[in-house]
Amino acid sequence: MTNLTGNVTGLASMNLSRRRLLQSAAAAGLVSVLPLRAAAQGTPEGTLVFGNAEPPTSNYWDPAAGFGLVDEQVASLVHDSLLSFGEKGEITPGLATTWAIKDDRTVALTLREGVTFHDGTPLTAEDVKATIDRLGEGKLAQSMVAVPGISVTILSPSEIEVVSPEPFGVVLNALAFIKVLPKANIDNPDSFKTGAMGTGPYRFVSYSGNDVKLEANENWWGGTPKIKSVVFRYIEDAEARINALLTGQVDILTRVNAEFLSRVEGNADFNVNNQSPPSQIVGLMQHNGPLGDVKLRQAVAYAVDREAIAASVMRGLNPVNYSALPTTSAFYEPLEPKFEHNPEKARELIAQSSYPDGVTLRMATTTLVPNQLEIDQIIAASLQQVGITVELERLEVGAYRSSYNTYDMTLDTLAVFNNDPDFVLGTYIGAAGEAVFHLKDETYEKLHAAQRAAPAESRAEAVKAAAQYLWENQITFFLTDEIWYSIVNKRVKDYVRAPLVGENLVPRATRT
Image 1 (cartoon, rainbow, N blue to C red):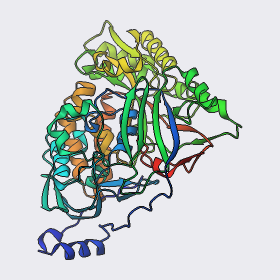
Image 2 (image 1 turned 90 degrees about the vertical axis):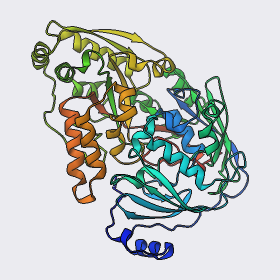
Image 3 (image 1 turned 45 degrees about the vertical axis):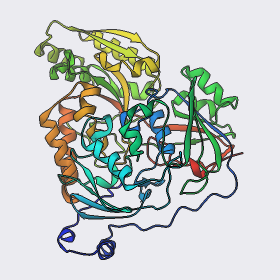
Image 4 (image 1 turned 90 degrees about the horizontal axis):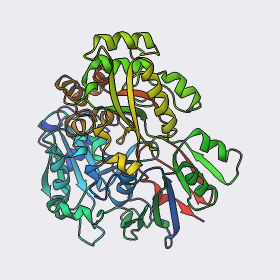
């Protein structure tokens, strides 16, 4: 993973014309002027079906309001962002054709001309401003990707500046993630109940039963996609999911486990794609109950043998991380203490906690994470051995999505959506932190802000300080990495992934 942001001193005070500014920034290596993507030839054909272990978070198609896999799969194809990510995570043009960092608070961008939303409405600078300004208000789940108070200044119909009230070192990564929406939909939030509206390569058609269906936008500025329809299908039962792949009912399975991989080993009909976002399997701990006690959280960490789970249940596919960051994240390094398996230490911490005589925790289990049912049973048994009783309740994934934060702990995945550790570190602040963990920690918020504002030469140290605080205090239970393996039927040609949660590169693929 590469840090693709930078700071420029002096440009803001040079009183340059727009053209001179871009020329100066280009000389500093801070602007990209790339040609329009080559248009696909011919008429889009065929249907590409993904088999997923989860449904959308909810039937509400505002990409800034959710974090689920399917939400982001849909958003990555229906919507465009000002910048975008390529196959290796590099930043490329999107709705902006050029960009330049003027100073550590300001980015100037030129908008692509002739872009329309799927209903035919032209994209305007006002749409971009409405999209980014509302994230600056801090009220949405994905507000954590932006600095509070960030806003857009419109210089002309095609020229804007994104302005942050504080230094924002990872602003380009944020702009490559934030999905641009119609101002009309933002002004009328009920519109998100009827479907997604964007400028992207696919238009939203329907969400019916277990299928989200999209169709190719033949007027997309990046060229007509080669595949006509894309379906994201929810198949909760694991055996039904792998059988759907083996019998040709779906083309791609996402986030598969070791057992699924073994089912296609040596089968010439399938490929395995291991391009994965940095991602962790964690136990989401709610801080408004017993797990608000740091001693109890640390006891949980010592009670569970993470290395044994990784080696046996996960068959070595998912490495154990010793940090609040995934091992594949930029700036990852192992931290101390290791919280290695030590039941006696767990009992000592429980005795020092507010619950010296033990405690009962409510835990939800589902099929969201590969091998989750088995892992949750091991966790429950491990905690029982040190004096923590676990009431384990099984939920369907959709029901889990709407109720997980009413349980003391639930297994889930935290992934880096924007190719920078700032994203997963930001999960613990603001509206996201309160919604996901019932957490508001002013000490950590300052550490997070510091790593976000840090210049390139000191950012690694600032990221480490934020990760160290989360790790020492076991703000949540960090189990292992999750490598997102996908099994792909070979009738799908040219399928590639960026190291992201979504599927923004699907327009390159064909299906025979």
